[in-house]
Length: 135
Image (cartoon, rainbow, N blue to C red; front, side):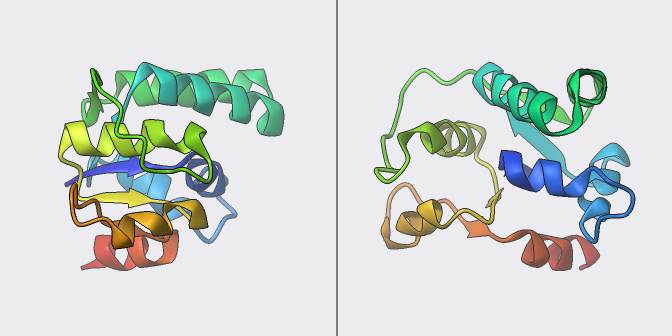
């Protein structure tokens, strides 16, 4: 299953003490494929460096790049669907190009996608995604 993980959801999943740690653990264990672009990786690194420090940020980015269930996506077009926060478009563009099953996010800017018939991109919160992973 291909997914795109919003930066805040990635951050929420990293701590072993987090209720959402299973999202990171399941990624490391190969239970889903994380789709990313260079632009998404750069945002991950920037935000993680601010929130948890450069060493942890570097380790996380290295793990993402090195794991076999990471899909590097090259986006050649931009859909411009997230008008409330155009910076979030990179996640939508990646999901569309990668044919991702979900964008996992807690950001309500993505709610506009529920009203967009094409391209259809399913947006779920992190709690719902954990339920999907548990089957």
